[in-house]
Image (tube, rainbow, N blue to C red):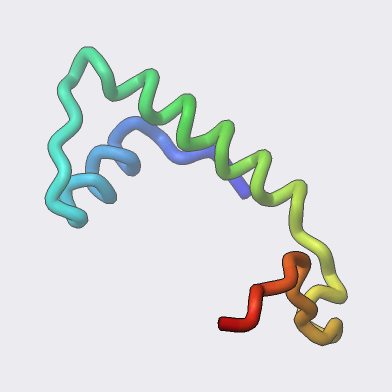
Length: 61
């Protein structure tokens, strides 16, 4: 996935009702792109074919 530009980040933020100050825009874009890249690395192609299993047991009340 290609990195989002500062303008694309600003547009998406405004669509969500968020305003990013001009002096913060480059840093926000950098961090958003870094997060997106990291999350993409976590994708597992067979994840939708594996049955869900709770990792933690929930106590019976």
